[in-house]
Image (cartoon, rainbow, N blue to C red):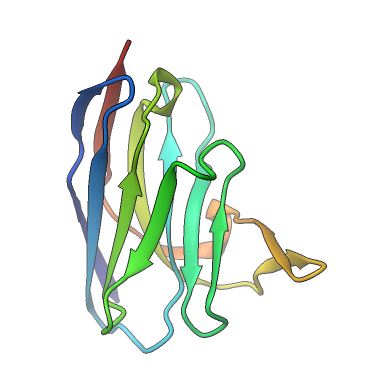
Length: 132
């Protein structure tokens, strides 16, 4: 079992920044794939960013490219999501996920999608609210 604990959510105005953190504990392992998802009221959970330390690859949703950055610490047990230039449409509960149980979806060498159904462990979520 792997436990995930997120922190860093909050309320900011449009254009502001937040940094989310997620610490994994328990039966973690080297090169564990971790990611961030979000879910707004009435919407499906969507992938925001993910990191595969084994392939040294990252995924970003088109809506956050250039604004969000995912990173991991050297031990691979903590993943961060740096969010800049936040917009009201970024408002959602953000969830940390770990253990991708399916091959990364790639096309022409580019990681193009992450499916929440393919991740085995989830954090409890942290609220991010962006006001205009």
